[in-house]
Amino acid sequence: MAYIEARNTNNVSLLVKLTYADAVRYYQSKGDEVFKERFRPENNQSYYRNGTLEEVASKGDVIHVRYEFEKIIEDPTTIELKRVKLYAISVDDGAHWKFLDGIEYDNPKIVPKNKQLISN
Image (cartoon, rainbow, N blue to C red; front, side):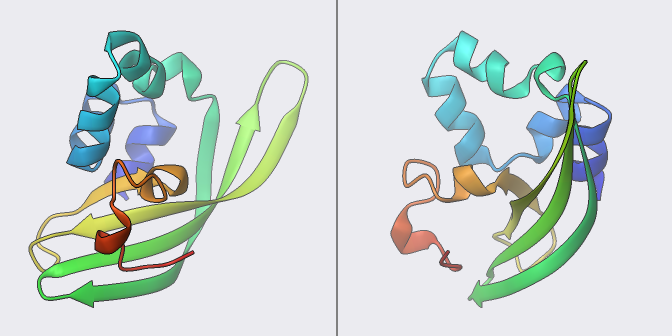
């Protein structure tokens, strides 16, 4: 829930800290502008709510969890409701968790296909 709270309150430092390390490295490798664009608070005009657990998969000490959330996106003229996937990954049998968006989980440069425990 700390990750969702960080997203909903635009707590950038906590958001980066709780984001899956390979995703953070991926954005850093793309340069400062791409990294800033991903984590910039003003680009997060959305609110996540009503998360539901969809699937859990494990292999050894590695656990992957897929959630679906309602994402409310507001701009000055519209309000849009989407259902989005978020993933939680633990590499130490659930002691610590890191998070990423569905599009990041599906990016083989962030989570290689042979390391994905949940298929879409």
